[in-house]
Amino acid sequence: MRNKTGFNPLSRSAAHQRAMSRNMVTSLFRFERITTTKAKAKEVRKAAEKLITRSKVDSVHNRRTAAKFIQDEKILNKLFTEIGPRMKERNGGYTRILKLGFRQGDAADVVILELVDYKLPSSDVDSSSDSKKDEAKKTAAKKAPAKKAASKAKTAEKAAPAEEAK
Image (cartoon, rainbow, N blue to C red; front, top):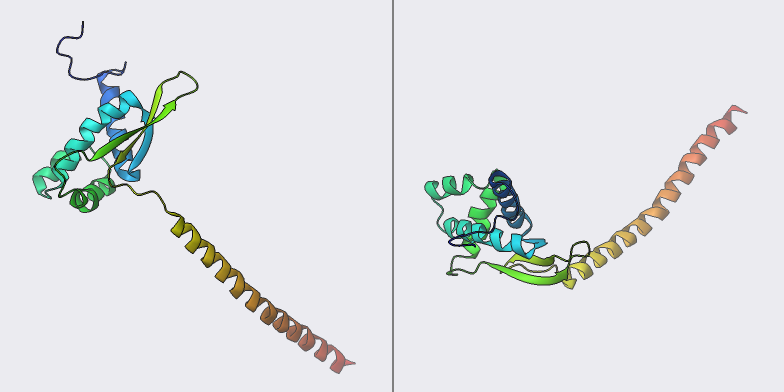
């Protein structure tokens, strides 16, 4: 019987649960999107939502409270300078769980846990990178004839002193 059990222990010891939760929340804030199992995502979501709520007000107390959970200073700074201000007008529901299907090995439900305002890399970025590649090829093609001419001049200079010696 599961009377008044407020969380899912995920078949782990307390220390392992805490470590896994901290690592997954840190990864969520670093990449803003992670793939995991449904049960883990539901547990991680609770901690992540509370931390985002704290990060909306950047105070010393809130930073220290969040620092107890997030060990990485860069991610803590990102939480308070980027993620918190982005979620300022939201009253909750900062994360989203998207179902992917089942894992092949053990048929566990696999989901994507992401921040609500996460944007996929668009095709515009790809096309702009393609245009940059094209520009790089053009400049390389322009430089190639100049290099050939310079190498011919050097070989001519080397040949000239040899002719003078004769």
